[in-house]
Each structure stands twice: as structure tokens, then as C-alpha cells.
Amino acid sequence: MPKRVSDYYYIFDGRSDRPVIVDRASGVPTHEAPPSAQPAALPVARYLKQDHGASVVRAFACWCAQQTWRFTAPPAACTALWTAARNVASGQVSTIKALHKARSASREAAVRAAAIGMPHRRPSAAQLLAARSCTEPDVLTAAHDAMHMSVRWAEFAYDPPNAAIKAMHERHMNGLLDALNGDAPFQQPCFFADQLS
Image (cartoon, rainbow, N blue to C red):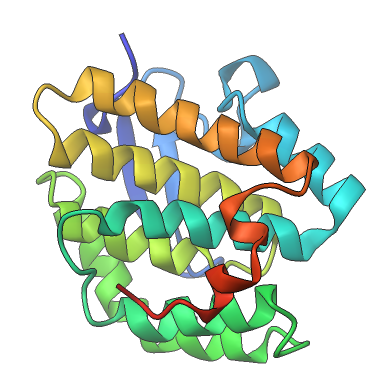
């Protein structure tokens, strides 16, 4: 059975300015877990960064966040996050100052989403945290967190959730594999031109 939100603690860490996702069973933060316990797509994201560069991995994180907008528009706080991450991924902005500014503006909403929204299975909390993860300065952390939050959104949005969780994991892997060939949706120029919708 796939892991669910009840298998994790979400603790907002003020030093890293992000929710730390901790596995309840092991007590280990998920991004520090041994490779066998990490999402299967993460090693592919590492290779993609090495082979194609950080901007492609950031675009992948943006695409993961965008997967959560299938049925409902994301919370208003997502607009600035999405715009900042998209501009960095597309090369319009070369520094991460815009990412930091967007993260700072969304900090209070992120604390509420991690502390209240996630334990109460609110899709809007997963949407916000997925969008915010796109602005994480480290692109592999951005990809990890965006994948995690989009899976949580699928869990909250679909009933029964197991098939949706599995489908989202498959969508992540397929997107990364397509990126290795340059065929991923987030590598197309139109992806960056799209407005938040």
C-alpha cells in the first residue's frame, strides 16, 4: 500500500524556511532517507540535473506543482510562487532573489498549510506547498518536495486514493524519463508561456 499523509509529520523549520517531511515510522526526514526509501524518481532527477542542468529539474518541480491544479485553481499565494519559479527555470531571471522574495511572502501561509492543512487533508494545503517547493533554492529539494506534495494532493483529491497516488508516481517518473529525451511537457517553450490555470 502506498504511503499516505498519516505516515508523515509536517514540521515547519524556520531555519530552512520549509516544511520538513518526517517519516513517522523511522523518524527520519524523507530527503535524508536511504535511497531505498526515497521516491523512485529522485535518482532520475539527480541524473537529469547532472546531464541537462538545474533549470530542467526546476521546470520539473513546476510541472509537478501544476499537476495539482487539475480540478481547482490553486490558492492565491501560488501565483507569485509559480511566477518566480517559472522565471528562474526559463532563464528570464538568473538569480534566486525572486525565489527568496516569493518564499518570504508566502511563509505564513506555508506554516499554516504544513501545521493545519496537511494533517486535515486539505488539497489547497498540498497545492500551496507544491507551488512553494518550486522556489526551494536547491533544485533537487524542490523536485523532491514538489513530487511529495503533488502525491499528497492526489491522495486528498481522489477517493479511493491508492490508484491516484500510484498514478501520480508514474506521472513523475514518465515526466523525468521524457525529459532525458527532451520530450517532457515542461521542456516545451509553451510550458513557460502558460499562465497559472
